[in-house]
Length: 150
Image 1: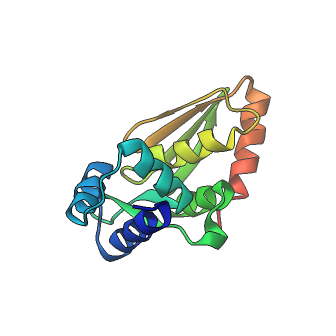
Image 2: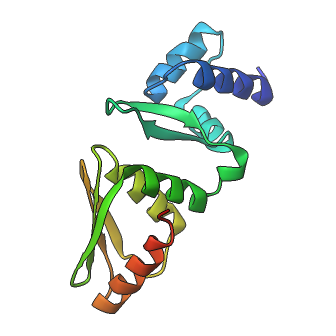
């Protein structure tokens, strides 16, 4: 099967069903006669701008991000506005409190952006810790992140 055919099936499945995991997506694809590796499916999902989001019940699902929103900056902005509860600074650490299951989503986008002033991110269930090289850089990072909040 050609790549564009496989991606069309993936797109249809994501738009019409609440697919929670890549394993579930692979099972659904197999039912459609598509046999691919997990690596191929991951690549297809990235190319189709499919991102993990959370339902109000806290379950994961994959969602297609519109092309205009596809860049990482826009994904971070959407995530910050959907999941963020508060941001505070403790010395060189930025502490972000989120709704349940929101910390890892924001952390993934921050890691992908590779922003100056971030040495590491550590995400838990509803708390994200961002380590900066200095207190001053943590302050600058908070000012930068606040630009993403509507």
